Length: 300
Image 1 (cartoon, rainbow, N blue to C red):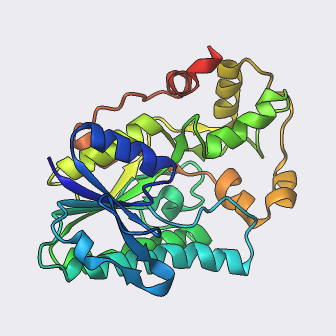
Image 2: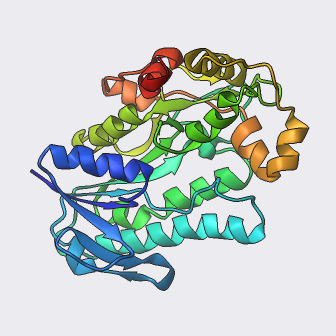
């Protein structure tokens, strides 16, 4: 049994991870803005507050907290919130961990495949350089903020997460709505690559990173077979038994979402999970259609 602290433990991924780790009899400690309790410690990154005593003796920390990148249209203020929530929170956490008397052995800190930016058909692995633009800049700063923990001798994994497929929330649920009304379709040219992972495989990849002592640095949390948007759209339509005849041109996506459309929907990011494969991670879902059918079993 290990004592594992999780920031963002009440979010979509954090809730599933806490349940998974708890089922393995690990002691799960939530790092939350709420009050301290037997199973939670308090932090407030904006105020620079964190309960360092509560983190003493943790064997591992999983850092998932951060402002959602897709909850609202980007403007200067929202982009600043997205950046600050990641950099300030990660810096506060990692400086605190570095100064503990009993430091955790490992920190798994969320990042995103937004690190690579628009790359057309290029295959990106963990050795690829960052892209250009707002999201790559955020991811670079986010990962750099873990350096205090790294320099203190803590094994740090920067988990670059792709499009997470879950029926309980996130991007897939938002995509399902137009399909349910029969107006789903290809976005933009449809040629852009989307790199995806099921929620099950994401949770298990975090577990894998916690357990695999020689894994450190960037790790791409994506399935081995990314697909073009056209294939993703047609596959999702088959799974939910809905037509896919109403395309959304790129200009329409930009009118609706502004800059966020280019970064999240129209950019092509073809990512390979090289380090997971090199460490024999057992993906449950390597192909999109079987993965979607597992995630959306109620549509069978």
